Length: 133
Image (cartoon, rainbow, N blue to C red; front, side, top):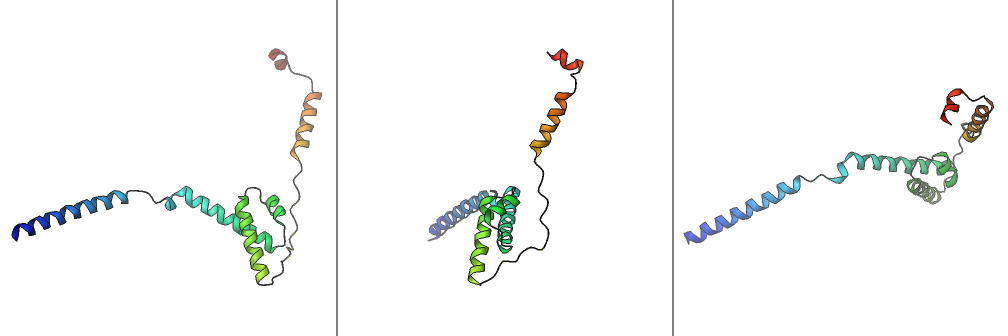
């Protein structure tokens, strides 16, 4: 009887040590949801969804939303836009038009670069450019 108790105690102790060793080894792994890269991507996605929802609430089409927010992830913008569209339909909400003026459209850079190129071509070539030939 005493020998059986000793064997059971040794068995229990070895199982306990093996179990704690496995738990400690698993604890060293990094949770992928806690990395900075994961958090940054989650933040960007949430921002893009909010942008899409705001565009829909303002009555903008999805293409306009993409154009106005070129850096936002398109799939997340669409998801936010669609969620807001469904919500507005369910609750019979009307879109709220923005009273702020639209920002001025940026002038095309290609035109400016052509002007610079034409100015450069009109100027006489310097001596350094002759040496390069």
